[in-house]
Image 1 (cartoon, rainbow, N blue to C red):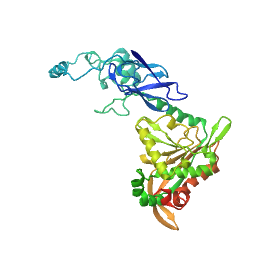
Image 2: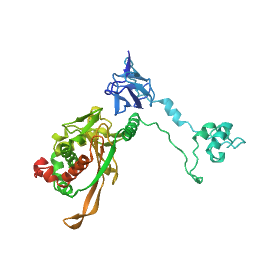
Image 3: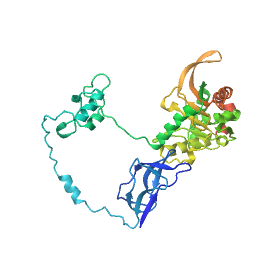
Image 4: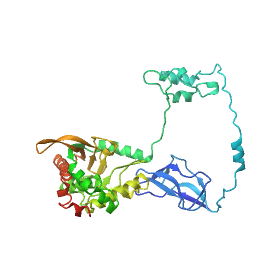
Length: 401
């Protein structure tokens, strides 16, 4: 029996996917539920499992865009699995064959000369034929050689490599690029900045970090402090937690916080649902779970949609200051950065403190300057006084110790 495997629907509004990688080869025997391909949609990369066991016949190439519901492969379920225990005599004999190296061909009149089409292309690029190694017969420079040739910038390199690689972007990366460009043209995005003294958080982490990890199995990182500080600020300034839908403003009475995570397939933004109901332990556990799933390529579309506000941390890559780009249709995104020891005035004295610059990008169509600045100041206040504003003056209870 021949089974037609069709592309399943990855989610609403997605009409096509792209075959990113085939994990099997044409003619292989596959087991039921074995991953056979990775497919890219404009929201995520998903694995395609085999629906039955049998011999597979591929019907699409890597990089092909296929519609949802289209046939991508056939599985012959009546075929038996072939045993491969017998020694392959032919392969062993082949391996014993002695390779005979051919002497390099002597140069002829055609070596290094360009075809008429190649000459025209090289003239347009203002390149000398002597700088190109021909791949045609007897070393002749073909049209393809001329097209691939890259002119040097400035002086001619002595022996440096001039090769380039042309690689098609994944559907996910193309969609991200499209959305980022759209944000610039379709929103009135502005960014406001502030600085945060991280010493109070450092003190709490040094006091409870080991015992917190021993009891809960997750580390006490910065993300829980920032997430809960953002939740508090969103309650104080609800416009930052809203979004525009045509002529209407939609205000949310919940805080679904999107966390930007860099994965092997590009930027992923999984969502912490109802962050207002989570404790420090709950936030850290959810961040760890989502980050692992995103980096392993196991994140689902449902886990990346519906956020009301985004937090991104460029500090893990060493960024000191940046302008984060909105994640539509959200109206705000908070950018974290690296922590650097800087001189700071504390109680009239200059003291070296760990400082982080934070940035809030917001949609000025729906968020005014007062709300945006007030929101960022509220985040700053909570981070600089976490014991009172985030822990209700009881760190042991807040951390569930």
